[in-house]
Length: 345
Image 1 (cartoon, helix red, strand yellow):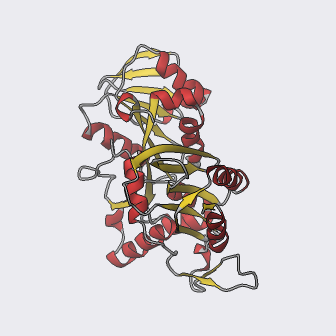
Image 2 (spheres, rainbow, N blue to C red):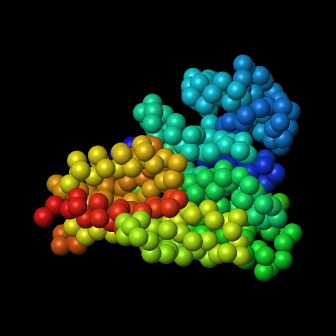
């Protein structure tokens, strides 16, 4: 397991068009003024970073008067990261602002799939900004909104002052129905003065373990499971009064006592992620694997996954595996049956 303190924390900012991501980006830089940030943007010309005048310009990299660095993503994330690492600039944290229509899973993949980046960087958290005024319309028209929410660790519901308390609660409930594992905050003008956004380390084994242990099975608001002719499938029926929010996304926990066969589990989970990337957005979990003295902390975003050592199992402690899935139309019964079949007597 790599030491977190030796790697550069990465915060990924996502959110739909007009939600206020650039304002949030500026507020982060202002709040954490003691840190030197590297910021990756899509286009310099569209960036409104408050940092004073540009002092220097080297290829696709500019230095701002506040000491921060801004990079152009036009050459692709992998090349941009390599340019950063080989440049003369030193930085404490990396901020990546995705486009409003982007699925952040592709950005996350770069820090999971490539060993060279895993050695240099550690994902701090994925922060999703949602607009309280336009969330309903955006989410009904653009599936990217749900995918952005589903992989987030922190969700900031912005422009909350512009809606009534009743409607605000309605929007909070809708967002929680997509991702009940994320921390949800309500703000105005993307004000994060009382919110911890940097160095939350949501991806570290300790934090993943706490989240998974405390997770209660969740079902989406105003959705209900209905029996079908096939008992191994789960049908999700939307509230007929709100048909356009039939996103069918759920957060579900699965617990199996005992120890699992490592080879069978790995083979199965690789198949799940490879063939269900459009419906399984994120998985977090604690694994009890036969022959391993430590809890194994599992997490995945789309096709890639990481397994890291957690705390040792205590003597006499009941071993268990617990996985939290966030996805669309999850086959709950089928997943449980497979996990049970991997148990070692």
